Every structure is written in structure tokens, then in C-alpha cells.
Image (cartoon, rainbow, N blue to C red):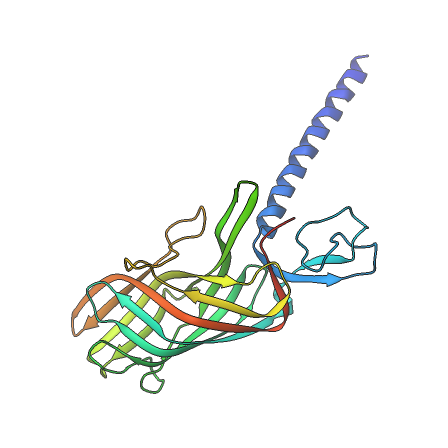
Length: 273
């Protein structure tokens, strides 16, 4: 009897440990696959998929649908490009940098992350001096390597309806700490921009080759989106250096009417399961 009791205790302990391990594995998997994420809703043989429709939002019973969700992997190397209208870098207590247009390019390195390059064209400061990065042409500002990250600006349920907004965070790619370094008026003034900035990215929950990414500020002069939901404040600081003197201020970046193009059909999955 005693041996049987000990065996039962060991079995219970083993089951508990297995349950804890499974819970931890599920938590880890959710952490990796947490929405929003980039991927593809692909058609499979009828009756073998999980999702009944081509948006892959709400799963049905396994083996009854015609679509499956495939998370994007780093090995797939899905590239993107984009172009935008006027872009403005505004810093409290300093000159404002106006650029006539902007362009972005990059490559997704996973379901949430991307490498990004930002270029600003036709750039001048408030004193009409041209601003540029070295060794680019006058008026052309190029970013250092940037990292982009998908996240939720808003993901709430109100009166039974899910309200979602997705964002794209731009920050310096390690080992760099600056997003952009440039100068205005020859060597009269050098400028360094650090921190990070979040813009709103659309559409989501549908397969497409087109995206829209906009960075805006409020009427009061703050960045319109200062953090992801539940996250820490995520904004820019710009340092202006003239000779041996330097001063810094909080900054906002606006990029108007950006239209992007994926190299293949992709979807930002933000709702469902």
C-alpha cells in the first residue's frame, strides 16, 4: 500500500510539473506570437484549415475552414518601400526643420520587427539654411539604420465592440543611439536626434500590398502618439550643437500622407485568435 501511495504522489507531482511547464510554454508562445503581428492568410484545401475567411480573424473549428494564418519569419525577407509628402521636425526652443518630402525603405525581420531607412528631401531650417547629412547632397537628410516595431496604440473592448489602432515605432538600431545626424548652414550647426517615435499604420486584418504610415502631432504641439498601449513614453529629443555649445529639447516628427508598398501580399493581424 505504501508503495502505491508513493507512486500516486509521484504521478501527481509529475502531472503538476507538466501542467506548469505547459502553462509556461503557452505563455512563452503567446509572448512571441502576440498581436499585432505580420504574416499571411493563405488558402488551403477546403476543410483542412482553421479560418473560414481570407482575413484570418476569427478561427472556426479545426479542419473546417479554408484558410490558415502563417506568421512572417526572418528568413522570408519581405521588403517594403514608401513615399510621403511634407515632413517636419519641431523642437521646443529651437529652429524647425522643414522637408518637402520623405521616403522609407526596409525589410521585415520577423512578425513584429523591421530594419528601416528614412530619407528626408528638400530640408531647410527656420532661417532658410539647407540641412543635410554627410555625405549626401544639400537638403538631403538620411537616417542611421533604424528598427521598426509593430504595436497596439489602442486595443480595447467598448460596449461589446473591439476598438483597435496599430502603430509602427521607429528607433535607433543597435549599436547606434541616434536616429538622425545632420547639419544646417554648412558646419554652423550640427543636429542629433535620438529617442523613438510612433506613427499610426494601416490597414490591418486584410491581405494587401499597400500600407499607410503617418506620424502626426496634436494641436498643443505634442507627438500625437507618445506610447504603445500599456507601454512607456516613446518620444524624440533633439540636440543642437554650435561650436562648443549645445542644448536639447523635446521634439515631434510629422510625416504626411505616406503610402507604402510591400514586395508581396502581407497582413497586419490585429484582431481575432
